[in-house]
Image 1 (cartoon, helix red, strand yellow):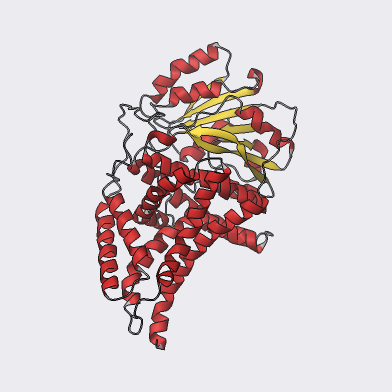
Image 2: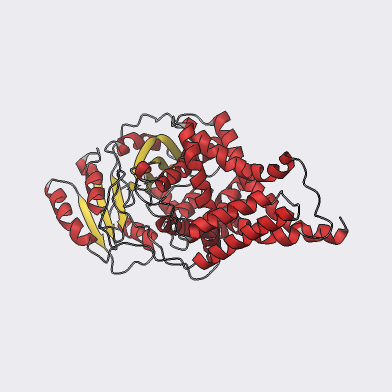
Length: 483
């Protein structure tokens, strides 16, 4: 290999190294969890402070009644509990909620129905608006797709015996895990995030994030960190890091569970992931300079960087796929195929971290590991299929102004076979042609490289081709259909 070939190959090797770094980070979280994570005892705390339960909704006809009834059933003294329906809806949601609110008020439940003239600030704006109408010292937040159990507040509030605790995050469980193969795959990923990623970050003393729902905030921590901000699409992630930079702590309690509804179609899931991808990178752009100027340890700063920029794996994957052919065909690189382990090693290392994390989470939660293996294939396919959509979302994080908050439709489904008549839908992202084109490129490149005797890159390209084809066809393998 001559010098020019080596120089030309360097960017490609850097792309591969970056992909491996994110995989290695997942594996590191598994190791940290296995060595350090423990069940969290809840301290005794006899106080029953005033809690406001904030329910931000926007066009949620299918679930708003369920949400209100669940909030009203929370076991907390009536004179110490306020429920706020933060209603920015433009459809029949408000009309459906009104009689339920009136009945709850007649039963002695303090419910506020707060309407704004516009959606300024989206969810962050609604939450901030709600705080202006209450003097509560703690704020529990549940999105429209959640059904908090009656004992949620009782089980969570003891953590706040620690005066420097900003927030308690519960673990999301799933109302409709078994509704379809797609929901089972999503549940596998979410279980990995809460049971392993969040717990490992907490055990290591690294920054973790409030996930936007299924948790409780101390009001003084919100105010001390600068309040809810709408300059990113992930106001929860943003506030979490700002609070921790101010010296506050967050807790993830694995035993504090709160079920939620998973998106039931690939289009809805892609919309959710686009918002999270854009918001995460917006938060990274906003806060990474402050994180690196902070007094945190270097490992904590590196962990925060990989956490906030996790969605960068999608543009890295796209760039790696596009660069594969010109790089491996550089003069002097084509060689006879090596042993099988040398062909599969780069691919295996790239998928090792996430695969281990998801399956280890099943073991930690006492769920059948083999069933996780069944769902892992579809999760991998869907994850790869998000490459184009999330790449665009990551790039949009550097645009001004901040994009509109794209809601994820909820249907109110729980059991397999549940069917709901709804007019909610997700507009096409318009990327099907790009996804299909890149899928064809990857498939053709894989065939061409194998023909030329270059085998090591082929597994990556074949997986890219399969995942992108799946995304381009809208997941029409019945993954989004009830079974």
